[in-house]
Length: 109
Image (cartoon, rainbow, N blue to C red; front, side):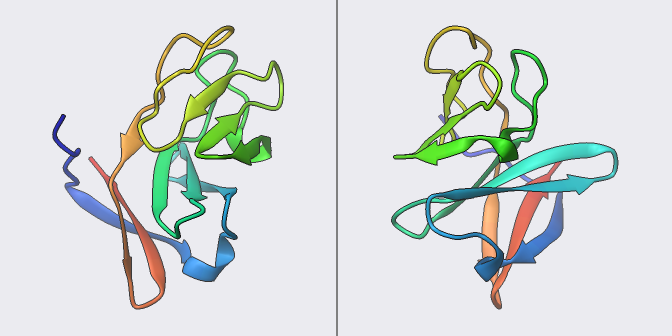
């Protein structure tokens, strides 16, 4: 599967704003995103709301490349957006991320 392309890069935060195995919320232009930093120091971005009941994923629990929704414990692989079982069955959309000069950028189309 090809990586998504970005038509616009948005400066989201300082790289130190996200701890390892953590998630933060980023709002831009009426949309909500979730930004993650994996245990191996890579950064990822997904839609910020659970596909089950639109709860903010930034309030969830991150463990081993999985984000767990705080409302019904639905789980997604934040690297791919894949739903990992009930009650979630719709994948999250993912976005390209780059880090430049200590800043985390999200590619949004």
